[in-house]
Structure formats: structure tokens, C-alpha cells
Length: 631
Ligand code: WTA
Image 1: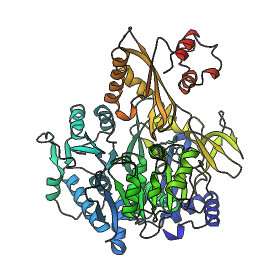
Image 2 (image 1 turned 30 degrees about the vertical axis):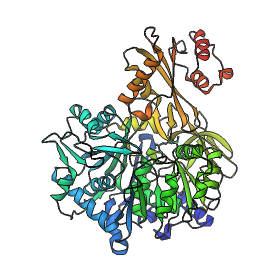
Image 3 (image 1 turned 135 degrees about the vertical axis):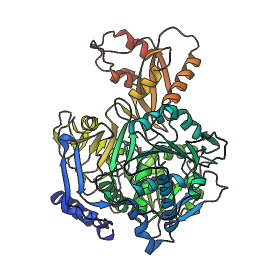
Image 4 (image 1 turned 45 degrees about the vertical axis):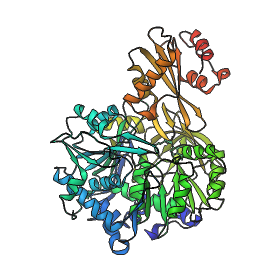
């Protein structure tokens, strides 16, 4: 992809310019640097009014040929995946491109042997072990659609996701290691499956070695199955617009929706954005600390680095175990050149000891990346100075599950750095700001962040419900994709993301819909109603604050609080547990019955003196109770 690599500010300007005057020519040139089985007939067709986007129409390809086969001749022996285990006493594993190719083919043959066909959905509920990346690629190899569910979700969440897309097979492991703890995986699948009639087979990888029950006729040990198959599996030629994967994500309303990405456009943009944002060179060692259960892991642990023939580090553990220098140890151990993590991790490591990174010179490091939530200036400076020793570029990358790849970011050390600013749009990305009515704002401005023109890895649909996709993203400002984020643009055209403007909160970089948490809380038999808002949290970015109405007086408030938390953990998973719970007798509602969340947000933020106009409330007295009972 070298000819499309941006190497200077002038290159960036030229690429951006061409991408606006001749978008189809521009993206056709980018796409031509990949391997296609047959070329596309048309570059782009789109109609945002219908939420329709198609790229490289009629082209045929398989993304795994681009991630694996294409590299075998030149860099077959080079490490593709460098797996670092949870426990530093255990050896890391270097998997070369050739070995990865072979393991992906074997896994693909296991799937085929179980009857998985092109277009079938396969759910992956797994720890960060090589088998997860291999399973992702194995699905792509045979044209099965992967749906990875983060290992922190509960059985109930797994049921929703499996049933929504009617998965036929689940790949899991006995358990999941996370620091000193081990958490169950197969038992969660066992709990889910009685409610998931579409699943015929469960493949179980060994990870923690814990005993699990295996149901005959349904559950198979992966290691046994891998012995039954050979290492040759031709890649299935896919249409550009065939789905590659589904990834569930939370929105303002309803249950999580399955964001669908397709083979051609996603490949082109994941590869292009990786190359230019991280500016990797041959022999670089790239480390993204995300979990493959999130989009960041899909695009920048698996697909982006492998498309570019780079070594990608995959880390099973957590940043703080056995101690909060683990990241720096791993960087030195493997000579990591680009390191990509989330502000939450940065803040928690900063809190664990401001000077801790100073004993690690980390001479290999060239670039630091941030993703998932706004990075505050203090964390940005600490990252730049303590971790990057002031010699590494810092890129703050803004994007979403729906965008498939990074849309706003610095490009290596090419573009100027501005602390806490995501920076400039990548070529091809027409980010604009609008006011509430949808009028475009020009120059220095603050408004709602929209995108005015399609890019190759744009969301194609929400699985099984295209109208939901249209309503969620394309209806608020007709003709535009609405991100759900508020942002500011400065005089130099740099964007700074303010945060979500909808009812989605960002807890430790994880998207959580407030309505989902409310529905979970309301499942508790004693709870009649609840309202959930976000509030600023020093480490997590945002915390979850729940206002809860109990149907009778319970004096054992602490017990009730724990029960509410347990209910949320059971229904959604630990990631959605409320940080604060306040019991109230009523919620601030308008006469039409709508909860005034603005007031609840102010209370949760502790800004009780700026509640604004409360005169339209049905019962203004509840405000007094709520403010005085703040926890
Ligand atoms: C937020 C994660 C500020 C934003 C890749 C977005 C960010 C949501 C940044 C998407 C950033 C992501 N600065 N905010 N650099 N990156 N966000 O789908 O609110 O898990 O809408 O994708 O995270 O979260 P998602």
C-alpha cells in the first residue's frame, strides 16, 4: 500500500483534496492496492436518505487472502500475531504469517466439518487467546459472519445477541483469565443455550483448565476437532457487499443493535486507516490493548495490522496485574513500536503511580495512540511525557463501531499534535458540525458531529432491521450520518470531541445505553422505576448513576443496593454495574410524563445550583428530595 501512504503534511492535503473532488477515483486507487479475485464494476452507490451505502460493487475478494496468503511469499516467517499471556511467567507465543495461515485454515475446516456455510452466523465468546483471532479469520475464510461477544457480558446478553442473528455455532473456552482471577465462559454459554434454539454446536477451547460440563451431541473440544482436519482451506470468494461481521453495540433506545460491516469496504478502510494513522514500517511491532470483543480489537488487532503485514501483539491480561507496570514490561519485552490504548487505562496507571513508567526507557516506542473516549489534558500530558518520554507522537483516534475505522486522528508525527484533540479528518472523511436544526456550522464552532459523505467502512445496516439503522443514524439530520457525539472545531480545523449527546454513556471506553441499564434495574421485583445518567468519574471517564424507586419502604438499603447491582450484572454483565444508586420516591417528570434527564444529570454531576428551569415539572417537590439525597 506504499503508494497510498501519507508521508508528509503535503501528502495529507493532496490526498484529502483528491478525496473530495474525486472520491471514487481516490478510493478506487486505495482499493487497487489490495488483492481482489475479480474487480468491481462500480466504485460507489449511495443514498443516505435510505441508509444505503455500497462500495466496490460487484468486486470479489476474501479478506483473509489479504491478511494472510498475500504475505506468505515475502514475510511468511515473520511474526503475525505475538501473543502475550495473562501470566508473565507463562511463555509468549510468536505465530508467523505461515503458521497463522495454517491455523486459520484448520479452524475454518473445523467449522466446515460442523456444517457451517457461507452466510451463517458464528458467535465467539472467548478470552484473548490466539484461538479468538484465529476463529475470527476462520469465519472470514469461509464466508461465515462472525459475531464476537465480549467475555464480560452475561448469559442473558449472550442470549439476546445469539438470537438476534440466529447463530448456528458458538466458539468459547472453559474459562477466561483476567489478572489474578478466572471467570467462567463455558458455564455462561451453558446457561444461555437453552434459550438459543439456533445453536447446533459449541466448540470449546482449553484456557484455564477448569472442569466444565460437555453436552454430548452439542459440545466439542476444539483441540480434538483440529486434529481431524487438514491445513488446506481455499478462501471463499466473497462479494464486496457480503457481510463480514456483526458487532453489537448500545444505542439510546432498545436492545443493543447488530452493526453490520461488509467485506470489501471494511477491508479497504481498515487497511488504509491503519497504515496512515500508525505509520508502521516493516518489522514494527504494533500493540493495541483492546479486547477483540470491541470494534477496536477487530480493526486494529486483527484486520488492520494483518492487512499491512505488521506484527500485532495480542495481550490476554489486564494493565494492573501482577502490578501496574505490566504494560511497560511488555513494551520492553517485545520491542513494541506503536502502542494503542484507552484513556481509562492511562488514567488508572497514572493514579497507580505517576513515576512508575520512569524505570522503563522503552526505547523502541515511536507512537502512542488513544481511543474510545475523550482524553483529558492531564492524562494526555502524562502519556506523552512519562510513557512517550516526549519523543513519541500521540494520536487521539476518534471513531465508532459504526464507522469501522478511525475517522478523526493525527497521522503519526506528520500532523501537529494538540493535547486532547482528535485532530483532522482522514482523507475521504467529510466531518461537519451542525446545530440542533441541522444547519451546517462553518469555521470555529461547536455542534453535533455529522458525516456528509460515505466512506468505505460505513455501517451498512443493523442486522435484521434496516429501518432501525436509518432511524438511528440517518434520520435526525436528513442526508447525513449523525454520530451521536458533540464536538468543537478550532480555527485550524482540529476537532475536539466533547462526548455523547444522546442517552449513551461511555464507561471506561465501553458504550452503555442508559435505557438498557434502566430495563435491567427494573427487573428487580421491588423496583418500580429507575432513571440512569452518567457523571464524571476520575478513572472511568463516566460513571453510572442510578435513581431508583422502590415499591415499598425497605430499611436494608445496602442489601437492596447490592441486589440491584447483582440484577444488572445478571442481565447485562459486570461492565454495566451502577457506581452510585440513590433511592428516591419520585423522578422529575414533565406533565406529559417525560423524565427530565437534564436535572438528573446535574444532580449526578453535583451541580445542584444550576438545575435550570424546573417550572414545567409535574411535581417540583421531587427535585428537593433528589438534590438533598445525592450520594
Ligand atoms: C467515543 C470505539 C473522544 C465517542 C472506537 C464515540 C471517543 C464512541 C473517541 C464510540 C476519542 C471514541 N475521543 N471520544 N478518541 N473514540 N469515542 O462504538 O463518544 O465503542 O461515539 O467505538 O466512543 O464507541 P465505540
